[in-house]
Every structure is written in C-alpha cells, then in structure tokens.
Image 1 (cartoon, one colour):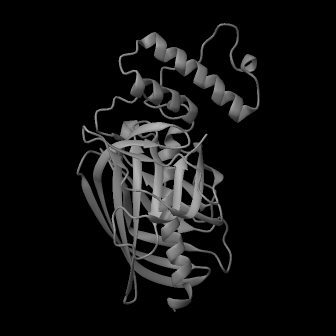
Image 2 (cartoon, rainbow, N blue to C red):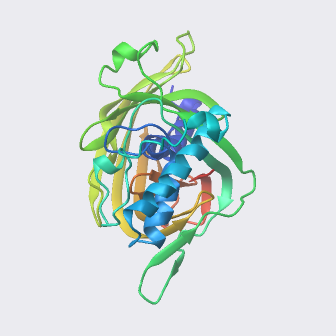
Image 3 (cartoon, one colour):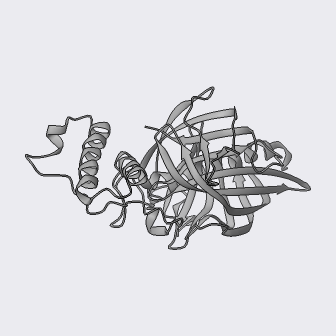
Length: 329
C-alpha cells in the first residue's frame, strides 16, 4: 500500500523543510508583527543593513531609515504613492521595530510568527550550490546565494488562519497554515509556542474522497528557541492519515544543529546568520530516505535562505540541491 504513494509523500517532506521553515520563520519579518517585532520585510532589510554596516549609528539615523522603508513597503503592498501613506509631516510608527543586536543568539521575540504575514522568495530547483562558502583571515564564514539560478521564479506566500478549513478541528493547537509549495495545493499546519515552531500535519485545502490529511505525532520541532551556537535538538515522529484518499503510515527522525555562523548574501541583501543543519530520515516500511537541509537564520527576519539536498545525500555541505529558496525583493 505504501509503494504507490511513497514518492509523492517524499515530495511533501522535501518541500516541507524547504518551505515550511522559511514560511514560518522568514515570513515573520515580512509584514505586521507583534509588539516586539517589525512591520515588514522592506522595513527589516533597511534596519539590518543599517545595523550591520553602521553599528554605531545614532538613533535619529535609524529612525530615518525606518521611515523611508515604511513608505517603500506601503507602495509595494497597496499600489499607492507616498502622499497617501503619510499625512503631512506625520512619520510612520517605528515603536514596534525589531532591530538586530548581533549577539549571536536568536530569541523567540526576534522571530515574530503570526497569521497574515507575507513574504517573497526566489526559488530554483535542481541547482548547483556552494555550501562551504569562504572564510576570511579572522575565521568568519560567508556564503553567496544572491546570484541567478536556472529556473528561478518568485513565490509570494502567506501565513493563513486555520479556522474555517475542513481540518481545523483535528488541529486545535494550530497557529497558522501555509502552502507547501507554489506547485502544490497542500498546506502545512504549524504551531508556534514560546520555545519552538512545530509542524503538526499536512492537509489538502478542501475535503474530498481524494483529500490528504496526515498528522505528526509528536509534532516536529522545526526551530527551537533560543537559537545559539552548537545547539541541537531531535524529533522522532510517526505520521499517519490519508494521502490522496489512501491510508498511509511511516516514521521520520529530524536531527537539527546550529553548526556554524557567518554572513549570507541573498537577492534581498546581506545578513549575519546562524546556520542550522537538518538531517531528515524518513522510513517507509524497510526503506529509509535521507534528506538534508541548511537553514540560514537571522535576527528579526528569521530564515532568509533554505537549501535542501537531493534524496540520500551524505555530505552536510552538499553541492547538488533539490531546491534553493532565498529572500527576495
């Protein structure tokens, strides 16, 4: 029974780490957040650039940057000009801005997660990548994912309210749902707590005889807060439910580690990052498939890039990626 659906289910898993983590973490910096966080990704980018290149800049200079960024995002989202966004000399409210402090630790407060947040990502499949990067004389590592890759396309995604979906009652603790990829209608179902971001399940947007709804028991810890150097966490989970209307059951083990830090260039800009290496072993029957992901996480933005390997990759710093996602204007 498992064989006819093992490949589609593997595709769910592959896109899960490539997208779910990015959506959950990265979208947090792309729109209105809670009282501790920024309002949008353009806003955050200017702040990140300002604080990383001018760490001693005074408060007035930062506020000027934030004001300009607010107007830029208003134009992008609303299609209106600056005059309609600010009345007279009234400046945008910057009191809820998350400003990176570059302390090497990413707390839950520095990764806002809530429904309604949106983000744009540049995505490519089956791409060659350099995950080793370069190291300067001081030992600081850097990676560059800003260049064009074959098949690049932009994906705009949003964190949605779970209420109203046909599967909502089966996931009462869900914080939000989001599409798994731009080529699939399937939705990932997530819970955000004070200490972690959890994957609870995957489901079709609508119920039918061929609908998908699988549950993870226990929920998978995708991110564990605070993120800091050498932190590790593991989840052993059982997945059960229906895929395309057919019952399925299998097991997965996620092993994650904050294995290094440095700077990363994306199409959006350059960021100080912690790199999280994730190894996923999926066992269906007697067959185990291993997939690796490298997440590049930064303060206030969350995950600004995610690179997922092909199946059965053995190297942590692989060169053949099944999918590459990075924050984009």
